[in-house]
Length: 470
Image (cartoon, rainbow, N blue to C red):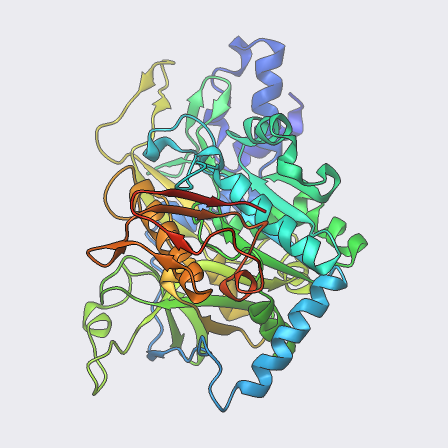
């Protein structure tokens, strides 16, 4: 190790990470050095003082008002704009100005699956993995617009190699490999409560992903932004890996984002309950932003309008449209200027004697950045209302709410609604579809498109497993 790196670590009081360095073989020494060189050590020193040793809570805005969202269906006021927006969205797709951005760094651990979450089989009939659901949607939109959609996939250090291998094994689910750009999320060290970086092994820092907000710096660091510039991509359709109902591309939403001059647009759904664990879109001190469910004062969350509806009812579901030039601007200084969120966690570490310690109570601070914190920095950010039943049923937990079972139920419900809108009779039991139904995105990506297709049946009977393929 060169003297400069040692001296730098000493100057910021982080030399403790080198205490086993001289015992390591050359390969392990290189591993630790590469982790350290990947960090902005001046920034690490600053964060240790301001975010770790201090519990710097993010201040809430003084004045918090409900956000105004564009309605899902065009009313008289918006009819002309929505017509133009949908037309503009399709035009952007034909011109190759839209890219897809999938945040897929997570593992399937909570689902009992040992591997990247995107590999998890999620559809009700064919048990397609999440990656395939998204790939087929994007292929369909590319086919219909006559222009393949560049697909940017952010992985993590843990799942990058397995994700690439999975795509290769499945022939990229019919996607052109040249139109998929894999890149890794940034990592941040865990800190002891006194601000020292922890070792996870003698040759490794205790690292964890830097949060979905870090995706905006990873786009820059990885060369994905440069790839977008070369291809002429102007907007990214951002979505996360755990939601198989997501519309990976929504021409109306993307067109609205473009025509309103928004740098970052978001989709919202009405909350299921006042205290649902989703972020809340609000106007805070005059700026559109998201306040986490845990941070929004309960008396505000419970407020109702005169008709009994929730006053703060715009839930965040991590679906965004982002202008490329905005991401470039956020990265201009060389450091993504988003706030850091501090969490105290139980983090296994190597103590000064080289022994692994598995703590039974929080012993460390992890720092993350959240992508929605970019919204107040954007010019003219907008929020558009979508429908939970149409577009949001994530797979997060092995059982209960947001589980594979509830997501498959919701996928079948949506498929049944689409078919009913096309005149197909669906057998019901206690008001629910009494069948398992799956529609390939290559056959139809929406109910209106489905209605233009020739359907292979007139009725779906009780107990049937129905798959409509493209």
